[in-house]
Length: 180
Length: 331
Ligand code: SF4
Ligand code: SF4
Image 1: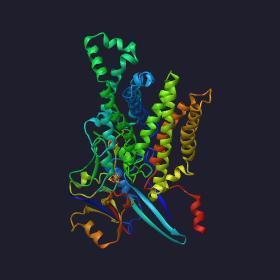
Image 2: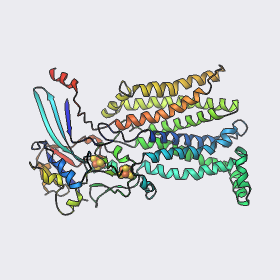
Image 3: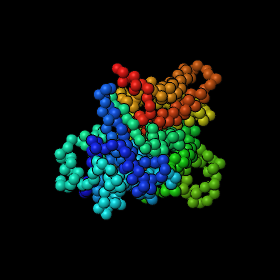
Image 4: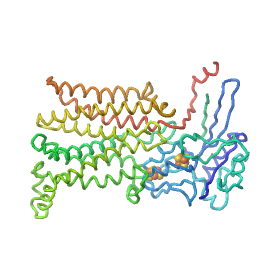
């Protein structure tokens, strides 16, 4: 099994939102909806404040509760990997998967009514390309690759830098990593 | 402390808090639970030979099962966003998805419930029984069902229980929603379903004796339900951080009145009191108020669980301007 991961450097991300625009363009995401977004987290007490920018999206979890709870098999894994996709022809729009995602990362594709989400641009990955967001980043803070390959860029970054994932307590084992 | 600002995310139904399921689903869970109770009581009364004492529950109640369930499935269908693909529930069985189990249980409920109806049709609805009795085949079917009445009733109980408990397990399986993530929801929804069905009988029964019997049953069920609610609250309040946080919605938060005032107060305690008074022989002009309130309480349980549960979350993005945060900066 290939374990695709995204490794995002919060130290070089400037929160410009280019990844958000790249995704909307590449995947023709309807107006008003977003498969990825930017979180600007300010922590601390004035004057000792720290700001972190995070480009967030579906974490393509190793334990994807959205797939487990889908009653029809519409939510599924792509080609023996951890990429979570939705088959629109199998989706009833019951929204169980939306409730099942602890990261609230899914969305209802209007006006058709099926559930839509980040695909890690599997149509590009298939051709050996990076996801649209990764390739559009002007500061090159985003990296994509296979974590099961110890020589990949993402594996090396995680081996050498300090990192975190979002709410690891969910037990979902998310695969979007943030370098800190 | 941390302040978050989220750019570019206001996905419909997801932001600022999840609100994917509304009254349609609450109504389905309510009517599904009631169907479970209808099947269980009709079967239990048959097994206990209560034809004389409780004619409504023994011979007529079962007919309401498929009617109530179909109403519930209609509201559930209304909730689906991709309606044309509803058949997809039945092109797969996903063993890890309670919703998939539920869709298949529903398929079995109809035939079982139909057998239940046929086995008491001549006694309960003589005017309806005339039609099948006109043909030889119809007569044979009714005869067969009547002679197997007890076996049918025995089969109906596990199916009814499965239906009732599944409506709760459905929600408790969501590890992503801290408010639901407790196994007590299964038994709680089952008992509430039984209680609403008992209230339905108390409401519809013509015989005073039958109404009293079901008032007594309902009284016990309300007490059990209160105990389960208490366990639910203990479970969450001693749970993980996100569960304690989720509980705040009903402990002083926006759903406090709905939960304590309407569900617990008007939906459980007031009918409990009225039922005690009725059984003590205090004559009341409003005897029907208690069962009506029980029905209301049953619906409110689902509604408040749905509302609070889907909003409860691991991920909070309070992106609005919050004046309180400014005060904290000066500290
Ligand atoms: S982040 Fe949510 S939608 Fe994405 S794989 Fe994990 S559970 Fe599923
Ligand atoms: S909305 Fe679609 S993808 Fe999501 S759980 Fe329901 S059927 Fe599966």
